[in-house]
Amino acid sequence: MQIKTYLLPAAMLLLFETVAVVLWLTQDNLFYLFNFSYIGISLFLGIFLFMKKCRYARRVTQLLVGLYMLVYLGLISGENMQIEGFWYYLFTGVFEAATIHYAVAKIFGPLFFGRGWCGFACWTAMILDFLPYKVPRKPGKKIGWIRYVTFAVSFLFVSALFLAQVGNLEKIMFWTFIAGNACYYAVGILLAFVFQDNRAFCKYICPITVFLKPMSYFSLLRIRCDKSKCVSCGKCKKVCPMEVDVTDNSRKRKNGTECILCMECVRSCPKGAL
Image (cartoon, rainbow, N blue to C red):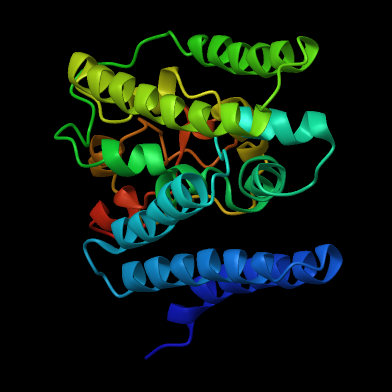
């Protein structure tokens, strides 16, 4: 087996293991060692399986991480991992749970791995990707501004709770997590069928992309095209769920910050140019 098969998954595992150990030692909490080690191992497995040409490699990681975040951290442990939980912990000055998750996966992490979170770990997209419209059947809409509205609403909602000095905020955050996820799934599934696009929610509604898009512009890990191999067959564009022009290597390529590193373009390229 060639060594290069291990390089990318090993690099991702090393990154998350480093985060795991640093947080464990600085926060004196063994949970962080388990949490980020688990995510790192899940990513290692998914990337490794993809490089071994396993058809459902990404879905393996998506389910491993997505269900862990949704069921164990959210429903069982009572941590609000939605954006409202991030604002809540940020306002209380507690650097744990959602604040650390957002810092690693959605604010600073994307400088390294772009919007890989959206492709490999998001528990909302985990469900939406089961729907039938894996490739958009209609042209994209220019309504991405809605994500900024949902972002602002989440911020204002949590701000209002603090300003009103509402009691039992922990309990409110838990039920907000339940209601928020139910709403995300309902809206996401509805939009998928209306726009015939599984990822319509990600493109137009998801507030997390307000963090992800600008940071992923500078991402070190990107899909690149070897122009000497490319025959301009267009297959990569046809299979991209986010309608990214991956044949353009510039950071200003069409829908460049929408790339979720799902690797469908790489899988479909007949010349191995990507």
